Length: 409
Ligand code: HEM
Image (cartoon, rainbow, N blue to C red; front, side):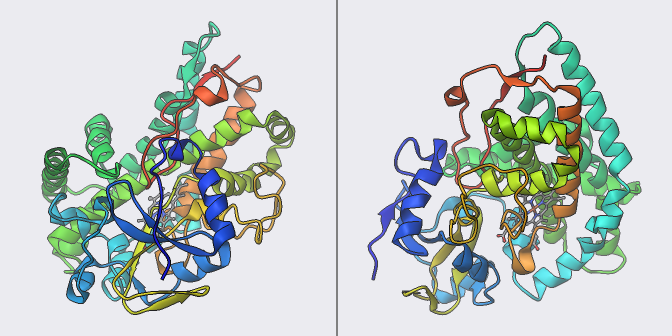
């Protein structure tokens, strides 16, 4: 039995998680870790084992099954403590196993195929252009502009709001509520208040769609609920929550982390600018090199599962570190180097197996348009602060910078 090692205890962890992962990877493919608040889980750090774990049918998501097995005392809140977060927010497909997962996923699979998503390209280009026009005015005097607040956040937020039929005016409310839901250790009161606010918000929105259906995805899901009985009320709220949250919290980091990576690697910036046909592949490299997620993928063992020479007992949590797997030298030579010409793919940035990101075609398209247009319009883009002054958000779910101050000209 391996002793648990501390993870995320060091204050600097989120500023450079790879420093810790590199050590863990060398020790073995999986390690029992303890979080600052005492919670314990197994973290899978090597590529092959991570990929296998993501597709392993013995690793489950639905915590109601875990409760039947006997839930361990130490369960991280963000892994789903319903006493803190409204139950409805949990009934989404990322927290469920087949057959419920299969049923819910089928409802949205068609919406996000590459072909359907490609139809959104003109609108995504239009939103991108409008946002870049606005920052070009603000940055015209050479002063710094925060690329997160002014571009990386509003682009995916606008796109997912339009797709779902969520009023864009409500974005700041939602951003504030979800900020509570994604930190590691939210205050109990705060977590409860914001999650109930979200449930109330979605309930009202669903009632509005019911009274007055639009062409949007949420209206279609309300119809699937009312006419075809394909999901229940909690699942409907959970689906709306998941799609909205996953639709922007991740893509904002694809753009933010990718631009930050390019600005720290000017040769790669120049290469990409000179050869825009490399952008599609570069987006994959940004997902690998510094993707939007940290150890966000939680599962638990429904029976003992062997990873490498370790047997993880039944009923324990397993987190797959996509960030670590994507830096495994066994799979990616010179993994620590950003290389926009890198080919071969296979990164785990969108996960793997049945929960593979349903929004991947949309995220890729948004990323492609965003990088193409930024490089074209702002060839002299530069950081307005020292790289070390850019702070990474503290949280084990998402990996992204709080602000990215840049000069455009
Ligand atoms: C699932 C990453 C964008 C919706 C996932 C998973 C990953 C991921 C790793 C699987 C998690 C696991 O196995 O535990 C990303 C990244 C994105 C992105 C890196 C951006 C670059 C999006 C967008 C949407 C979306 C734009 C929505 C439109 C979802 C949904 C799931 C999911 C609904 C759950 C799928 C399921 O359980 O079957 N995403 N995602 N994602 N993602 Fe994304």
